[in-house]
Length: 164
Image (cartoon, rainbow, N blue to C red; front, side, top):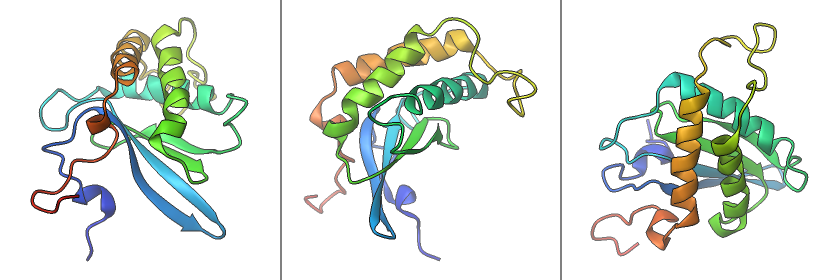
């Protein structure tokens, strides 16, 4: 069986940042998948499920209500390894094009106070597993990364010896 694309990235050299993970042709449309990497894989603690779940609710709510982008948002959700999130958008986009959107989203998560949208037994299958204060912390941490992002945090590390 072939390795899937996300398993071909050198996670030992991957820094927290914002990356184009892949672009897929679906019918006559391109779908761009973004890797929103909040922690350095295998080097920093991963996020706990409660804050990841809270960030998923807040991020999805923000993105699906953002006037210029809401019709293009196909998915926002956590990576299984709990080091970041995936954002799938209908269209062919670059990191530079979506950076303002992702930064605004994580500033929203950073600053959010109050009831978490969809955090009720009626609306969510695990509504008690939420941690807003830690979601605010991760929103602050990732916003700071994005506010000071450098080129090496916007393209995956080159493979050793390939010159890529």
